[in-house]
Length: 160
Image (tube, rainbow, N blue to C red):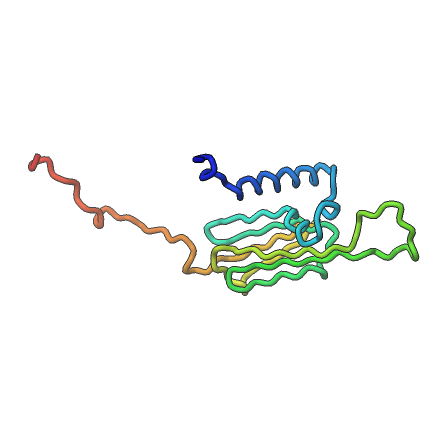
């Protein structure tokens, strides 16, 4: 009975998600063949990095042209949307196999910290979107200088 109290469903789901990501990264299966687009977008690799001054987000967005990317910031919520389109190079194609489809990926991330949207920067080299979001001054860590005069004196040995 005690075993039922120690179940960690989120841990189990993360393990499952990571296993699926490894299959997709190895090219054994395509995300859009497993899930609808809304769920497959959760498998798009993303890194969120915290520094003293910034929150940095990196997202792999292959085949998404820069003009089809939309990034919005509302409070602590960052939303990234991207769309791939059919290249339309061949008229009336008869597909034998079709894995490169039009896809829309969209997700929202809680940054867990207030950032300054006016100073945000975005770069998109080689299909990797990198967002540098400066933290608001009031949430940045502050260093407190300690001077010897402000420190309390060590206890004297006379009272021992």
